[in-house]
Image (cartoon, rainbow, N blue to C red):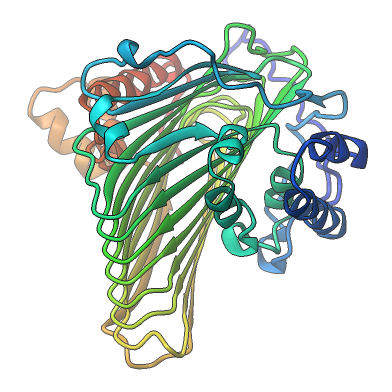
Length: 461
């Protein structure tokens, strides 16, 4: 430690996986259900029962890596009820280059609109409460699907039981949107919990792209202030031949704890492309489930983490191959400064029915200081030997000295060389964001985070 430098505060005592300090109570669930149809009330209550019965982590291989010490959530209360849809017509306020926009600030809805062409084609962008009033049949198909979230995950069932806001995008069969839909969440007010469900439903042959942005609200908690909790699901239904691209940029405030669940059911010949960036939050626990149920279905998933100070990112990815000739390509990367940590846990399951599977899982960590810690645990479970490919790869280490030498030999200063290597390491997600403005924004966020922490970053031993 440099002479005169302030000592880093000692870490809080480690909590066991059973010590989740936020508790959802039955009265909150009943309050939401009071004005909802009976089938939705039963869905909430079933989820609540599973939430109460399940541990935070059911996989014993991963239990060692559950660390909730940064989550101080005992004093947090959920927002009371879903806000209604805005009365004002905001379609004229759409920014250039997007087909639709939904903006939420804590428990309020700021904007909810699609352009005229999309609306005339039957595209629906609405809150879950709005969809219940608009089309009860569609709402029940999407909300009453028990398999749309993992039944063995306590935090997913927490959100399913207690959600207090939600949005749905429905794209009818054969409708192809040539511009993205932007979903923006402003959250993080101390002492409050926002539980959200986002449902994306694409009919046969439909095509769309989504940009999800998770940002601090103006009242978001900072270091040392009462924490906030954001729990969000993203549930994807892709019919035969549908194609969906999703980019998510998470840059919540340091006083926010985030639990995220993404679950996709991918039909015959359908394709899904994930580009996920995790930058903000005090503690982030994320899980992605991809079910390649249809023959010739495809998923590509790229997720990056850029950590600083004592941030913790706990990422799990499950990809299940069920149909014939399915393809999965999954990549996770973490660059860690200061005393930040990342746990990257991936599992590929190839069912007996999944003849001709081609699946790859890669997990790579880059430690930029001696206190940073990255853990990579890729796994395969293969019950069908007739595969085109089933492989995984992982590595954790400091910046490659040969790369540094190459750049420095071209006259690039060492600090700049390190910056180029780190930002290049994280570029695969940036390049997959389907909106130029959001790409530029993500690059700016990554560069700003590097600049803020570069002085503390030292080569790992």
